[in-house]
Image: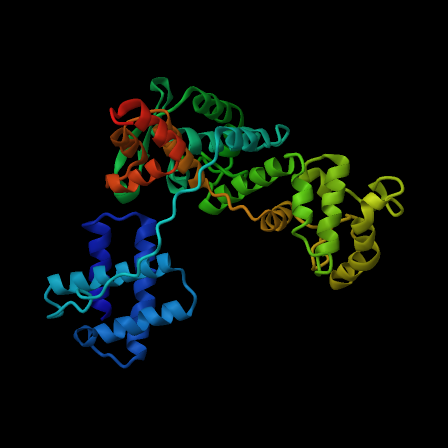
Amino acid sequence: METHFQDYLTMLRVERNVSPRTFEAYQRDLNQYLAFIVKKGVDTLGEISQMHIREYIRTLNDRGLATSSIARIFSSIRSYHKFLSAEGIIKENPTLVLTSPKAPKKLPEVLSETEIAAITKAVDESSQFAKRDKAIIEMLYSCGLRVSELCDLKISNLFLDDDMIRIMGKGSKERLLPVGGRAKTFLNDYLIHTRTGFLQKTGSSSVFLSRNGKPLTRMMIFNILDTYFVEAQLKIKGFINSIKKAINPKSKMGNRDLGILELLEYHNCSISKLLKIKIKELPNGWNKEKRFTYLNRYIKEDRSEFLEEENNNTNRVFLNKSGKPLTYLGLIKVLKNYIGIKISPHMLRHSFATHLLEGGADLRFVQALLGHSDISTTQIYTHLDKHHLKEVYKTHHPRS
């Protein structure tokens, strides 16, 4: 089995020229599938039947995998057996009469221009990463980039004198994208004032770098967006009170988390500044004022228990359950869970497409900008704004 599997992987890499991430997904999915088949006592590929495949799909379902994940895995299995059949390695393809699990199609979630502006505004201008992060947010929204495309963007792909960038998309398909004035300004600002400092450590050709000069990863981009999204939400009037209602004060971390929100309301400061507060820097009368009820409970009842876990004497107010000072990303994760709203870089891509169509852009034009091979993928954005669709209908149809 191993020889044919390696032949299939070579075909994916050489003939189909799939992206590295797609290749890894196929390899992972099929390794797990073939391990299951071997455990069932199957010795040759020709012995694999529809029954084996159905049983494997059931095990995936029993593990609680999402329908979309199971559909992706089944697609990998079907592709592999199609290859085996075409090469004459097996006589019959057992996947031909099997149907893929159908996940209900969800409309993409879209942010308004105001919400995107609020996320950008939440960037701390005093941070060494401010110019980089503003450029990242603007490039995701103004150019409609996938996260992988942003991470893979090289200096040689920038043609800013012509207001264009070259993107290597899915399946190694190249496309040229225009860069708007705001995105160009933010990008140039980062390249001139920030990137050169990061670059001295590695000499990387990637556009977006970490403080160590290494290319940013997908997870880093997600964390960056999470951070500013949460900061932006906390600035909305009344939002902190709505989060308070989602916190159970009787839970292990309830008093701490409610105490954090009490101090955020009082100081009206950023999360990073809040986490640096020490016991002696708490407001006068914090242990008597009603506005600090949960902060008082946390310090008197819970904080000392957390300290015992690590046996340290840190004077930072807010600790994690291991007794160490609560980190910035740790608190962002906590607050994000309470907020109950998911944010992802792909939402900025969805917003890019939706706002173009709402502005009257042609669907084929949007398809080209997004790098969709099939226009049906782009068409989902036409279902997002019912009000806009009605307006277009009333304006252009003679029977409206």
